[in-house]
Image (cartoon, rainbow, N blue to C red; front, top):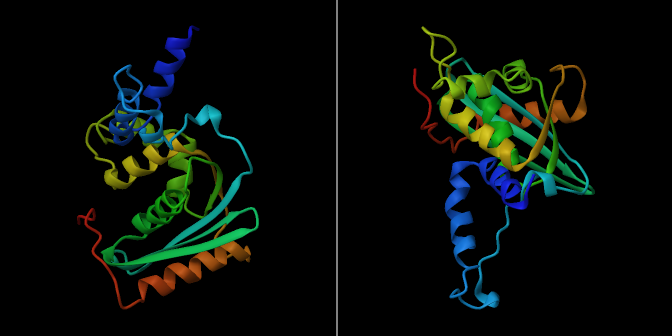
Length: 205
């Protein structure tokens, strides 16, 4: 494969949301471009160039009724650094909160990374590992001829993030005494019962 073809393959693997940034960077490389010191830095690298230690993530979602008030929690372990994040919503579903936890955790990473993401949601893990989500996307978010896939907005975000990061999804059994999974559950439940709940703009009944 020639060098140009390799570049095209890497570009095609990027989510559409990053293409304007890529175009801006390429334009600075033209002969008439401004000096190198003023060029914008391209922070998103091809997945093939990702190196370094694997970041460990645990995520969970909770809902007080389904639909109802909801929350997500995530624990992110990067070497010696540990971070906990959470968020709560006025009206949503349990599956959306499970997805929100994974999305929020991946979005919090400063650069594209190698990730092992643990979730007790078969909905998420099976849909990604077995390729269902990509098939729904390719079919215009239809599961079949009669049924639309639920939560296409969040699936789109999650699939885009998986183009940036090298993510391995791992299913873990919920409420089985796994410390980080239990912690995520506590964060999600607390967020769902919080006082500063926001609107899940993508949720529709």
